[in-house]
Length: 188
Image: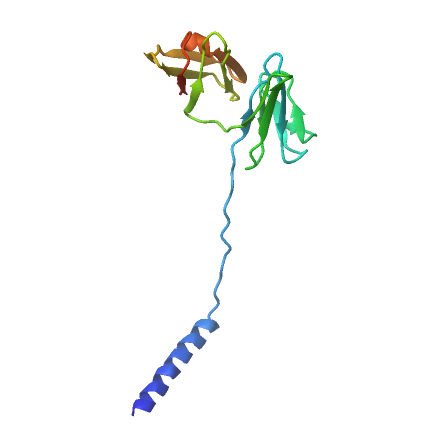
C-alpha cells in the first residue's frame, strides 16, 4: 500500500512535468537601457595648462561658450583646453582633467555631471591665495545659481549668479569671504 502511494505520487509529478513541457512557452529577454549624463571638464585659467583625458578618440564633445553646441568627435585621448570648459558625452566613463602651472603646482579633478547642488570645502581667500569656483551652464536656457558661503567668521551673505545659456562664470573666493582662511561653499 505504501509502495503504491509512492508510485502514484511519482506518476502524478511526472505527468505534470510532461504536460507543462508540452505547452508552448514564450520567453522574452529583459532589456535595460543605460543612460549617462554628459560631463563637464573645467575651463583653462590664464597661465595654466589644462588637459582632459578620455577613453576614446570618438568621444563626442563641444566647447561650452562656443556658438555651436553640436557634438563632434574629440579625435585625441588627451584634449588640451584652450580657455572654455568642455562638455563630453562619455557614456559612463569619467574623464579626468589635469591642470598645471610650470614650476608651481599640478593637480587633477574629475569631470562632473550636472548636479542640483555641490559643496566645495577647504577654500581660502587670504592674501596669499587666489581661489576660484567655476560655474558652468552647458544647457540651452538661463540658469540661476545661489552661492552660500561659510567661513571661520560664520555665514556670509548669499550671492546669486545668473548664467546665460551655454556659458560659464568664474567666482573668486575673495568676493565671497574676503580675507578668510577656512571657506566652505555650497552652490545650489
